Length: 141
Image 1 (spheres, rainbow, N blue to C red):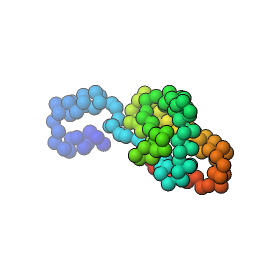
Image 2: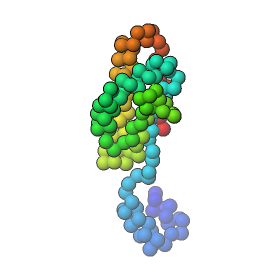
Image 3: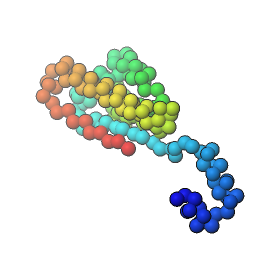
C-alpha cells in the first residue's frame, strides 16, 4: 500500500530513494516523556513528615538505594523537612534506553514499593496514625 501511495502522490524515483535511505537511518522511535506521580499534599502534617522521613531514611540511605536501583530514570521526592514545593513523588523517563519502557515500569514499581513500605512503617510506629486515611492520588502521562 505504501508503494501505491507514493506512486499516486507524484513522487519521483530519486525522491523515493532518498526517503527510503532516510527511513533506514532513522529507526528509533520519536522522543516521548513518560511520567508517574504520587501526590501527597492532601495528607495530614504528621503523615506527611513521617512518610518523607521514613522514605529517605535517617541518613538518606534508603533514598540512595532507590536511586541506585533506578538508573536511567529521574526520581524526585519532597525534602525531609516536610515536602518541597510540589509535594509529589515523581518518576520520569523518556523510555528510549536499551530496555525501552521496561526501565520506566521498573522505576514505578520500585517507587511504589518504597512508598508502600514507608506508609506501613509510619502507620505502625506513630501513635494515633493507625486509623488515619491514607489517600495517595496518582497520575500517569
